[in-house]
Length: 157
Image (cartoon, rainbow, N blue to C red):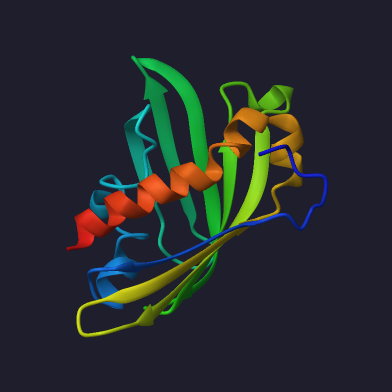
């Protein structure tokens, strides 16, 4: 996947999870649940902080073999349980003062399916700057979401 040229480039993923929408929704806001699925396989989650309200912050610190790789941080834009969650999601490197800060937007929509199942739709957008400034992270977005959703499904069952 090449870095995007168009600022409207987005990663779109849909999947059916084996849990009701309220439990899936909670997994995006509860630090103990989020810890089970949000970390890429090649990183360790060092710390997570969530202020689950509109305008509240989310921060997730990572490391690899004990060395910091930076963090993800964001701000909740919309919280509509258990249907929709919108948040800014920034990839912050170890030196944000040198430009290692890439702000994106994630929209999560949940729809109930058969009893105990949820269709999740994720749109991760505003990726052009990330694609140009950190193409190695950009290339991992879709695979990262796919792995994360598999972990999320296991965490909420």
